[in-house]
Image (cartoon, rainbow, N blue to C red; front, side):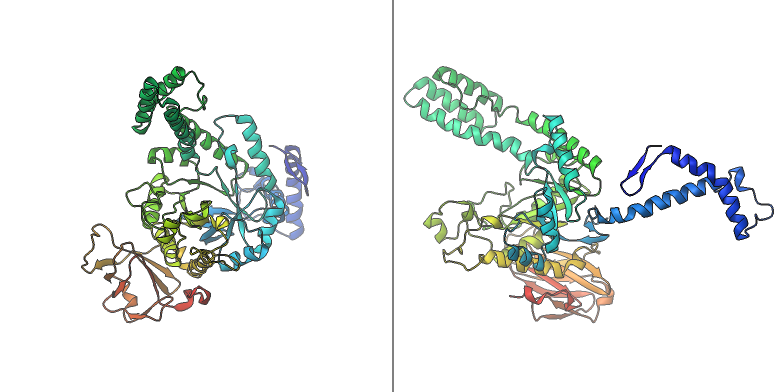
Length: 544
């Protein structure tokens, strides 16, 4: 038996346990006689080894004493973060809806405002002081392990870096999740393309007026745009040879990207296994770009606990190409939520939503774009819809990226006091979701049948989604309209016990009586209705 070391207990070795064994028989007999306990008539003596021998009993007592001594230390360690059957994160034994921010606000007032609204997961460096600050604010933290998680190269150094990071903060009570390098699968492609595209343009300008070079330049561009990467690399090499110049990026190739993806996927798997061997208590999460094939995504996701992607589709127009699906509208959030679950069956799904406007990432917006709303921030209604669209499609956590990049002005250019309206809108959405958390972490019941009224829109295959939850004696009904049309609808097959009861539509004055297990109502385009048998799921501060 290996030594059991603990700072409060010293070392318990095999010899120590053996000493317990040697003392046990006499101790057990003496204790039995002192207490007046007689061996039952006909019973097999303990010393014959057919039951709990004195030796085994004393060993159990020794281990119980060890466990009792260790309990205070274990309680001080980081909270258990595991997943339940609904793939919700379990925090201190309770399923929680995690609402997260990539931004770690420098201003304590802003941090406390976010936590008070319901945000409970904040990105943090692997630093005890930073984690202490989040702990005092009442939030949990996730730590990004960065490129060290990919053990496909520089393995020994990266393993040591992982070990140092994990051992530094694994027992901090604020730590909840480890995150892998952001969008690592996509960056195996995108990082290369970002270097090659300017080179292709340089080839064009270098070739001007030189017939042979112009031919090679056009060939290289054509092969690249057609995805014929091996032929592109040949034309690229020939071009620079003929031009008598070195390639601007001699170490960068696109024809080996698929090979690098597979190698990196194996490296991420090894990295996650290394972290889990060091710390099995915390969830390991991978966030992807809204790109890549399901096969490649599954390669990376094999041993992760939680998987998702970022998707920022607002406002829906052709200048926002964040979604590469046919659906580029707000409902691409739900589509990618389904896709991430297909790419990681049985794992938790964390979706990263839009906390900025695309103009916030530009140095200066074009007046013509601003005039028609291109690049604006999401509205409150859009933010609310995207959050519920992710949840109704199976998201277990919602996080926001980009709030740190919001410019200190509104979309119309007007000055702001404090933070822009989008920040207040996200706080409002967070309050609503947090108040509804008991229902959102509950297992969905059998959904009622949805019948939609006829409409003029081309909505074949789309429409209203419904999810039914039970919390104690209350029923909660989520209804999401994914279409761009207002729709009348009827829900049939509601639980029989709802007959004659009132359903309140939250954050409105509407009340609906259930009869014959049916509810009929209408809903605006891309809107969410929440019906409940109690208004206890409302947060007054989430009202308009």
